[in-house]
Image (cartoon, rainbow, N blue to C red; front, side):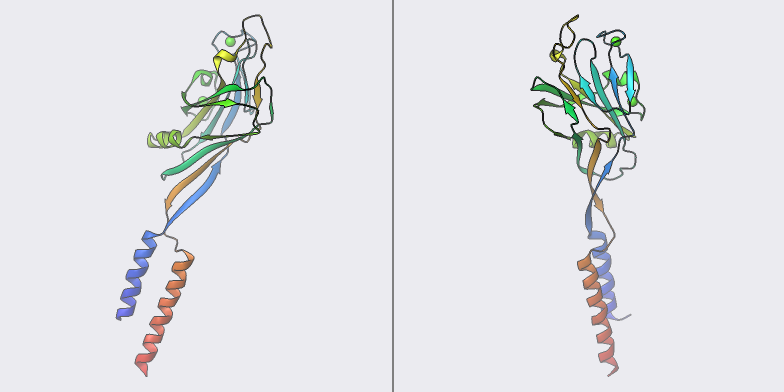
Length: 220
Ligand SMILES: [Ca+2]
Ligand SMILES: [Ca+2]
């Protein structure tokens, strides 16, 4: 094997290992629902019923206090996540504005049950003022859940408790928010790839041509 080939092989192996590509993709919800603490037994802190495939009607009054729950299958994410966010388009909202929205996260199970109503840790809070879209950074949440080998990421969207009315005073402050069902989880991951980049392919071609011309010259 001549020297040119040895140089080429060394160069190729080095570049194939070093090539780094970032991958971006999204995950649709496994399940999404609105869970109500009423009206069967309003505002007793025990969730009463679930509207499946209905993320999210976040609404807080004494009759219909509800929370949106959404869960994503994250088991296919096997590499470090560099950025992750929830992208939510608002279908309809009712004031008065602004009101406080709170986002809770939890290790989920891919099914909505009434216990999801009170599940999660507060990780994000915003003052909502009738915006058509909401983008919520969930990078840290995803990284922690993946590090803990969890299969599902769950999010619980609530209105701040102080926004509610008082008992017997229905619809004092409706303050609701509705989203379409397909709330996507967008992810960017750092991915060490072995696919050569176009520039590498060009150099590979150049190397082969150089090698061929070297051999031709030796024959003369
Ligand atoms: Ca209840
Ligand atoms: Ca669940």
